[in-house]
Length: 217
Ligand code: G3P
Image 1 (cartoon, rainbow, N blue to C red):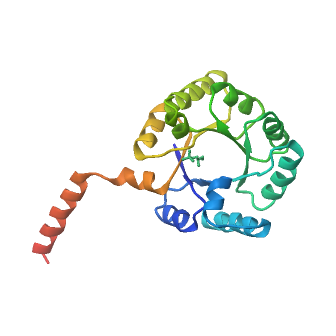
Image 2 (spheres, helix red, strand yellow; image 1 turned 45 degrees about the horizontal axis):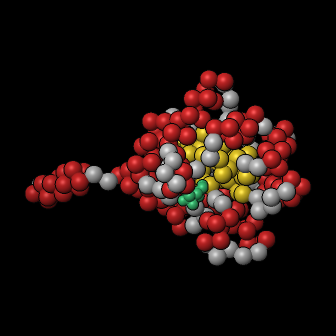
Image 3 (cartoon, rainbow, N blue to C red; image 1 turned 180 degrees about the vertical axis):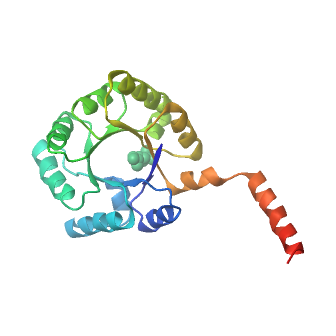
């Protein structure tokens, strides 16, 4: 399973990249706004900087919600770097835009997916990635991981090449559940990734090894 970091924060992206485990980045307008980025040029520069930090795919979401607007923005974003994946909402115009870009060989991430039917349309339109939102389904007492597993099963059964990118990951246990569900990618906050390291027996064992190594110096 690939690991993407779900943030527009450059320090966090650098930190995850320095661990050597990062396969890519996903952003969205909320994550970009959180970094205080303002204006067209600053947005473009920010995506270029992210691409210079990481080696893998970088999802950049369009702001437009109409087909023509999505195409205009998506084409500008895709031209920035071959790492850019145009992120489009799972609406009728969004699906048309996924089809448009996939026909041109431009990578897409179809976002805001909450049902297997939405995922099916994204796959049929040729999306590179489909993003089911795990945490937001959990928030409304639905089961986000069940949706990931259902999409994985359907895509395998029918041979769709679209990768299942589990998004809205909120904590470390979600990552483990994504592994079990067969997700191709989990895009996670840095804290959830770092949480995979935590075990009291690791800390305790290391403390003993450090103490014993001191006896030999
Ligand atoms: O990738 C989508 C993600 O950023 C949404 O996460 O926590 O706002 O539901 P959240």
